[in-house]
Image (cartoon, rainbow, N blue to C red; front, side, top):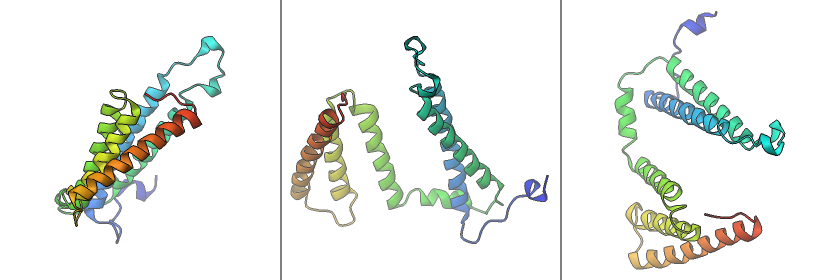
Length: 182
């Protein structure tokens, strides 16, 4: 056991306390998500009755990806936990999470979650994709933009883009990749 293992590391010159706390939280988040992905992949049907070779089971790649994500999250969290604490770093992190860029990121995450967990499967895929693209463009061109575009122009632009993207994505996946979309 080296003396490095028993001591905390001094903070690097370029790392602020808030980033260290952010690394700790992100590491814990990725650890939990990686474990969940690994478990769900492990729980997938193995298809032994169809004589599927164990190296080609449906959950193998997600299991490897989930395990890798969990390992990286663990290493990030351990690294952040070993760094010497900086005073007021939680307060600085809190202020960082309420600035304009962070709010835009949270809105994006909310839109993606609404699209994937709410719309896909509830309505036809082309409609879900069109609604997502329309909402994304409208929010980021008008509400969340520094210099908001005129509403009429944004509605027209968002509508055209939503129709094009929904049609192209649906056709490419259904006709090109032969994937049945929800």
